[in-house]
Structures are given as structure tokens and as C-alpha cells.
Length: 170
Image 1 (tube, rainbow, N blue to C red):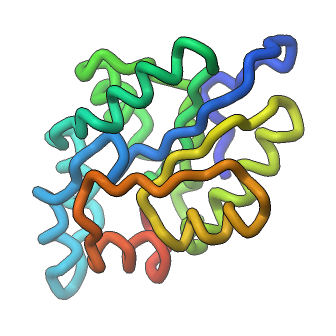
Image 2: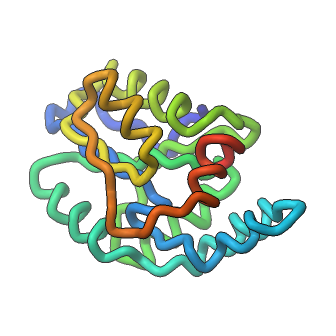
Image 3: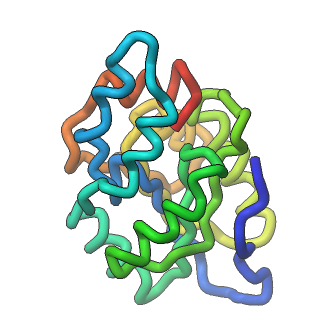
């Protein structure tokens, strides 16, 4: 996994609330057609992310978490989308980081990529909560004992699940 723009400070004692981006904060439905096409159009899928509507339920939860926690984003988006993702967060009045992203050529299923990232985070900070929309990620993290919740406010998409868990792309 690529190094985040700014690591959480180990001297800070506030616990972390970890938020996924796609399906938790960003509504990806308008760009799923790029993944339903054959061949799949991954670069178009990611380029369209700057037009994602915000999911208010996720944004409200993130803002509420800021009262007692430091927020960290853990996304399966590739590192090459960092600038666009930070601009999207800023445009929706959300903190722009720390933002932990998938390395550009890491195509492991999201559940393994995110498990590894959480283990690294937990080496320096207490993780109080994790919010993710991928049932496979939630199942693995829950089995590991993480305080994880499944975001259910965006209808489940088999196309997105395949991208996260089979293709290892988001």
C-alpha cells in the first residue's frame, strides 16, 4: 500500500474512526456502467469519480465522528486518484486526509488490502470504528475483531462488489 499523504501522529491519543470512500461517502452509481462494459473501462470509471454525489448519511456520520475521533480514510481507490479524491473531499466540506489508498498495481481483494492497512494503523493508534460498504471487507474485519459497521445507505451493487473483491480495483 502506498504511503499516505500525512500519517496520523503517534503522539495524538484520540482514537481513529476509519471511513471508506466509495459507497460510504461517494455515490458511485453513475459510473458503474464503465465496469459493466466489456472490456471494462477502469480509467473512465476512476476519472468520473470527481462527479460523484456525496452520500449525506456517510458525510453526516463522518462529521459526527470528528467530535471524538480523528478520521482516517481507507479506500480501495488507486493512489493515482489521490489528487482528485482530495479535491472531491474538500468540495464536499470533508477533511482531505489522512487518506490511505491502494497502490496503483495492487489488485488484491479489498478485504485483504484493508486488513493489512488496519493492522498497520493499529500499530500506532487505537482504531475505534471502521465504516465500509463491502460485505466481504466487513466480514473479514469483524472476524479479526475490529469494530466495523456495514454502510447500508447505498443499494448493494454486484458490479461494485466484483470490482472490490474479484478485480481488486477499488
